[in-house]
Every structure is written in structure tokens, then in C-alpha cells.
Image (cartoon, rainbow, N blue to C red; front, side, top):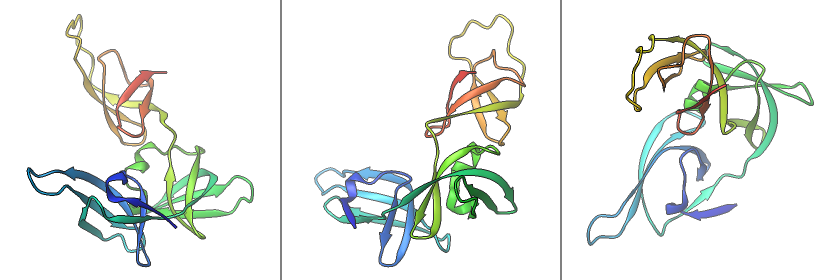
Length: 187
């Protein structure tokens, strides 16, 4: 098993504590004045979806879960479960929306992505750096607006709301960064 220092943990990483698997949701490095630094971690248990907060010393070692990745195609959502199909064996698996977290905002039908497995259990997905999504609704742009920092909210086909420039209109397809959720360009 790979162990890393608590300060090297990243958001989205899967770690193992005892027999339980946790996905890191939020991470904050804290260095209070003359005291030792520590890492405040908010994480979700993959199996029972409970949230927990932990304070780790910077010299603490955490165990990173070893994952296998399989290329799979996203098929559909049914209730709280998202279904994926292996592109070689046609075997289907489902992952709960709790385990996927914010990743569900970037899933489109028939999209090919990497699904992460811990043993035989699907535990999450690895999204591409950016995805192209269609704008469903946005307010009209302001005519002759000259302020360079103007943005407006746009609702995309997956339900995600992104701040876009005034020239983007409904029906346009835009590229969105999957890590930050920010508008990159019009496609």
C-alpha cells in the first residue's frame, strides 16, 4: 500500500483507514502562529456515505487506496444510481450519486470515462480535464456592454450553473473545466 504524508493529500483522493475507504471532499492546510501546522480534512465514507472531519498532523502518514481504472461508457441515471458499461466486456455497474459527488454535473449519456475500482467495487470516476456541454438557459446579454469583467449565469444540460460571458446564448455549446467548474470557451 502507498502511504503519503498528510500534507500531500489532495481533494478527490481516496484513502484507507482501517477497513474503511474515504473520499477527501475538502482539505485545508492550517499553520497557526507559533504552533505546528496541521491538515483539516472533510471526507465521506464510500460504503455508508457518512461524513467525517479529521485533523491530521503534518507529519502523519495516510494510506492511499490503490485503484484500478477501467474505461467505461456512461449509460443513464436511475433514481440515485448512475449506470456505466465496460466497453470491452459489456458488463454494467452502478455507482451512487453520493459516491460520485460533484462529478455528476459533468456526465453526459454515452460519454466514455475512467471508472475507479477498489478490488471489484466501483468507487468513483475520473473525469477528463474539460467537457463540452450545451447551454439550456441564460439571461440575454446586455447590448453594447463594455465592461470586460461582465458575466452572467447559464444553466447547462446537466443542471450545472456556470458563469459565462455576455455573448453566450441558449443553444450554444461551451467547454467547462471539470476541476473548477469554470467556463473555458465556446465550442
